[in-house]
Image (cartoon, rainbow, N blue to C red; front, side, top):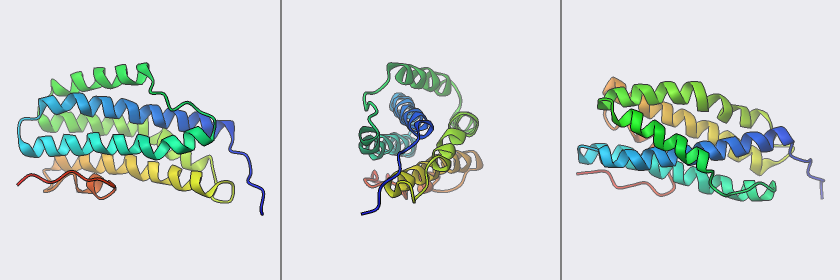
Length: 170
């Protein structure tokens, strides 16, 4: 059997950051659910909430294998709560313009870095998860851009990646 290379400490640090990003997002979208004004808005925010929950569950076995904590960080939760309160104060489409900018500037670069820090030769499972998390974050950007542009079924890019999608309204 081939010997598996060690995952770098840089990868582990980035992986922990990505996990905390999922905790932040889950908290933010959970808090935004109460601001939904229609079945469609509830579906969109609920789909994002589900997306972040599934992101956490995808990451946990890898975190544990890397010897990292799967405990959810209070700071990440507080950041999510603060972000959701700011977004809930905005009109619907402006919320998603703000979300798009926030994700693009603060989360996407770190999520994409994760895939650059591990190779399939080093650890095929870690590389697969790292690549998926970049796709995950780009889908969130696409959903946000869809809402701003008024695209029908704006949540489709996110719903397509869910293992347990929510039923669409109507």
